Length: 117
Image (cartoon, rainbow, N blue to C red; front, side, top):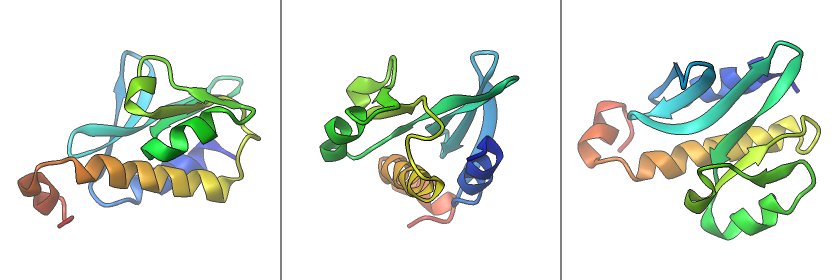
């Protein structure tokens, strides 16, 4: 899996924007709220973090190569540390779900402005 493929997928989601936060972390947001954080490291993959459904948090955080995301676990964010922990298709699905979870919490006016009702 390459970070470029995951980044491309995240940016294809409705209303997605990207920027750099905390000096070095690539962040994908919708309506100004983060749904994916991560990025490549000079030597390769440095992992990523994203929001998951409440009922999947314990399941996913118990898998090898995944863990509760530092600083965001209380909001049900998962950190994928091992590049081989999940197939790319499953990871893309989880990122899509993260986008949907975050977008659902946006004010209606914001959702309408980015083309999401």
